[in-house]
Image 1 (cartoon, rainbow, N blue to C red):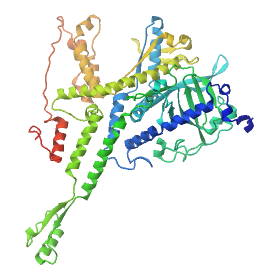
Image 2 (image 1 turned 180 degrees about the vertical axis):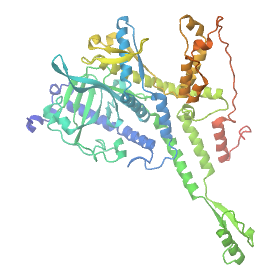
Image 3 (image 1 turned 90 degrees about the vertical axis):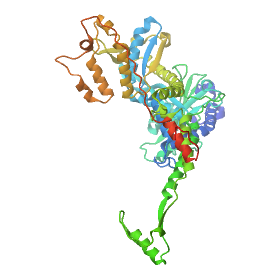
Image 4 (image 1 turned 90 degrees about the horizontal axis):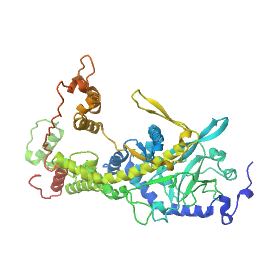
Length: 598
């Protein structure tokens, strides 16, 4: 039965707190959310601008209006994403309490099995990329997954999820002086209208008043959303949709769901039974004291990015206008006119006879301005430095004279990226700790994973009965790792270093314990990482698999291997890339050069 308007409609000022389940009246909460959304408008607009520079002009209907021939935003973002979240995370689970170590070990195996789901890694990658443009936001919680028959009863089950939230859809208490002191935070999301009306968890009186919402490609204040880059958001959708807000009120530990187009009554108010920090996690790097919103790294890149591309567009126009023409006497001059026609009609490589060759001249007009080109190159260097030395971080080219100098430069450049990695690691730790909490407190699900053993893979089950203890009582510590991307070449170097520095010197001790090194497997791994399948042909088996005991075992007592250090001096050209480019800039801008660079 659908309620009448009289049963639902009420003046917002008359709305009492107990009816909504909140200590704070719902209209006051909605007003605060809308005011914070207005204050967030400049950050959302900057966020959209940075995204448009990232995608350039060759994307969608309403992307960047100007071409980005040298897309530094995309280059910097891609390098940082690979450095910060190139690989899916894995975790080690620790506990200080011996009683719970078995459960912690099982939880670690189950979590690593769950983290193979690419959706979790994609949500983390999206949050890292968004953190470069504004703020990376992730929500961790439970969502309904169906009905399960347990002991003859139908029980509604839930599944933990990790979801990335766009700044477009986010709100945080803008009166707070930091993220940790914000009184509320939340986000809006779209729901098919028919699903919203049928949702049994929402107040049926309010569900009956929901209506289709149009023009979803703009926010409530009229500013554009990211979806606008792909065209009109309302076109092409299959079902009618409605947007609802979900806001976490920290002091009351409640989650409020409502529709802003019908704010008289909430759709739902529930107690938050999750971790103390709430469902939302924010990733940022540069805090601004006294403000909840951080300084985005890309906000410090944008001006140089714009100038580099503006200068390059100008240089391209100059290059396109450049031309070479032949100058000849006026056609009224009989000999000069004939000579001009003869040369003009000649093919490339022809030899022609002319009366007055000195009267014909070739002149070049236009061409790029060298000082502009030099300044553009200098700004390109400045952008790399401002962004933390991109050439070194991205491994794009050598920067100095020697490999040792490059290694020192790389180590210094890594200080900036290491600080960012620490924040990503803490952010990921918080996200995965909450994910582990929801898995641990699931009253119905038995989680399974496989574990390697001397007899092969065995199945491990983490049952609800084993998870009766409080999650935080276990003193469980979740430590994520493996998110930094490693190339196969880096893996081969690590493998070779481990072999030479640890395994081979320990060979006598391994033999005393009945262990050996499988040298054939070592060669196979190197062949795979180095993309050299022919390397396998260098190691031939003589009727049995070759291993370290065959290669290194001797009848006499083994002697420690002799450590040999080799120093290789590699010449990379005077000044490296920075020196060569600086020399070019000085020449183009009519500056002096050092003798070494000349």
